[in-house]
Amino acid sequence: MRVLIADSIAPEGADALQRHGVEVDIRAGLSTEQLVADIADFDGIVVRSETQVTEAVLAAGKRLQVVGRAGVGVDNIDVGAATLLGVTVVNAPSSNTIAAAEHTLALILSLARHIPQAHGVLTGGRWDRRSFIGTELLGKTLGIIGLGRIGTEVARRASSFGMRIIGYDPYISNEQAGHVGVEMHSLDDVVQGADFVSLHIPLTEDTRHVIDAGRMAAMKQGSFVINCARGGLIDEAALYQSLEAGHLAGAALDVFAEEPPGDDPLLQHPNVVVTPHLGASTAEAQAGVAIEVAEQIVDVLEGRAPRYAVNAPLVPQETYAELAPYIPVALAAGRLASQTVEGQPSRLAITYQGEVAQYESAILRAAVLRGFLERSSEERINLVNASTAAQRRGLHVDEHKTDDMGGSQFTNLLRLDVQASGGETTVAGSITQGEVHIVQIDAYRVDMVPTGGPWMIVGHTDRPGMIGEIGTITGKNDINIASMQVSRERSRGPAMTVLGLDQGLNPDQLDAVKAIPGAEHVLVVTL
Image 1 (cartoon, rainbow, N blue to C red):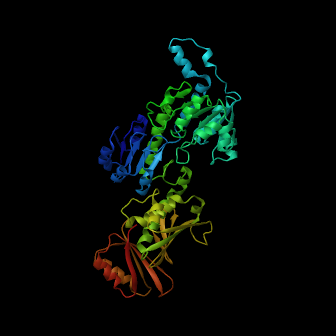
Image 2: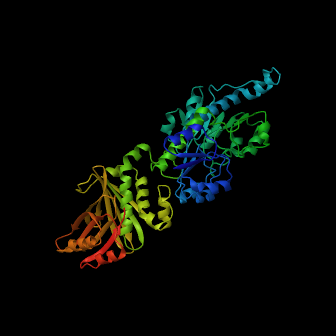
Image 3: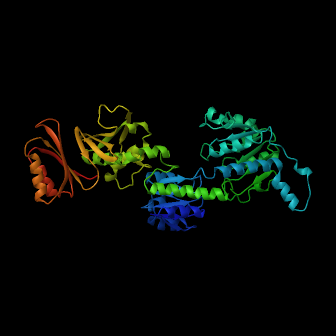
């Protein structure tokens, strides 16, 4: 496995990859054209905010399985194209939480006590105490917009200063917010009621300029605004006008709509504190981010679900640990169904019974679809794009869960029913003694362990001599039978014989089996 580190990250990231046997190539500063030319040799790539992972880069990455963003924002990665191509995009949202929260508090204190301005005056040779009368945080109201990891940590720390904390986040309940001492309000109420407004939300089309001229006008006279989240959340031109008019007392900005911001007049405003995107810039955070993204890249390359996949269903580690044994069951069921169904498939119904029904099934659905679609598609099918790939083919997928095993001998069962233009087929699998078993094909009970060579499935009439004639053909052609089982509805009625073979049959040999009287359906499948 090879991973390209295309931007500068802490050395702990490369070390973590190498400890897992990954070959690491560090090439910072590649142009997009160079990246397109080189990416075909790599299974993964690590970037920060500088390198642009475009659709062209992703398309050129024939081996590429994962893009790791050593940080939070993925604006420089074409996530949509990655999803269509089955490339997992992961980020590292948790390791810089404390650094960003502490930087936010540092900016709040800098605003309240004019620390950067006072420093500049004193180092310039003047002793001036009267110009820098500050304000205390005790008893002031902090409004937090966005109560994710960072916003929550800001709330915890601000409460120690005796501040009243109010917040807005449509995805956080009043109960959750109450645990960290936050009173939840509407966005406008937070903006209007706070002495300090701090932003901790992502930049989307809905949140761009969330603090615009109108909301600034509604803020308290003499209040402050702080942005340690994403540039573009604040209308910077309107902010400058509000500061010039004396409505807002000050602003602290760690991020800008354009970075670097050039000759933005906000940089020279006496009531503005600015830092060059330093929210995550601590030694501890940089090492943590590098390790976090490296470990997730290893997870993807070794077939496990990463903790923070941007474009795949979130699978908690504890859930993944429980479902991991069932993934090969789902994969084998999908593969077998794709080879036994006749005609154009239109609908898949996946039923989870028993133990397996207790968990979120997104990863198993993706495994079923991967197995079902991979033989008919040149694209990589995985957890990232399985549902999209099914939709593009007009394939409707249903899921059902039940604890009732219906008297089955198994404690868990995954059943796949496929509707197609040529009829229907059913495949079911289970885990028995820690091993994957296919236990049903259509109405027939079977027991297939999906390892080793190919399997020949013969649907036939149950009659004396049938098994012997099949064995004669394989014997004459020096094809060894590793296992054999017969399942039938009734004596001398419809039956199915499944043979595990050490090698496949050529077309002439397969035609010979099909020519046996009573042999109605004959196919060779691989799992």
